[in-house]
Amino acid sequence: MNEPILNHLPAEQLVLALDGVQDPGNLGTIIRIADWFGIENIICSDNTADVYSPKVVQATMGSIARVKIHYTDLYKYIKELKIDIPVYGTLLNGENIYKQTLSHNGLVIMGNEGNGISPEIAKMINHKLFIPNYPAGHPTADSLNVAIATAITCSEFRRNGN
Image (cartoon, rainbow, N blue to C red; front, side, top):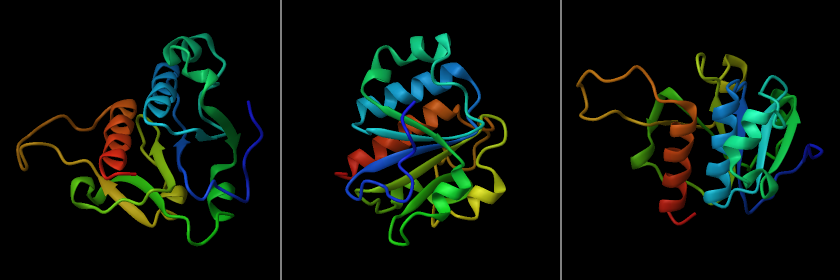
């Protein structure tokens, strides 16, 4: 594990933050997604699964060698960010991600598989995003898997030229 990059975020980079992601398969897949989309750093809350567990390492398919993983107190980390760093998060009360102008940098928070982003972290998000289901108003699944939601979110940031 790398030391946390506290007190600064690479100003020109998009960084993922994981708030309590517990499933090793999801963590490994998210690391692989980050690698695919050119995201070099993932900040993990202290209660996120262990990056070196065998299931995580296997699920990364080698991407663990290219993405830096940092474990820290996520609340403290976000609180100490510079004021001009955008903090994004996927929430049910967010704005349609497909209608947003997304920045080239910032922190993108993804939440726990069953509980989403914790309430104390959610209060710190200044850009709330929502991945809408289709067709609108039609009954669908209750939620998306966190790794799938991460892939959609990262894809949308990159589609916007970021």
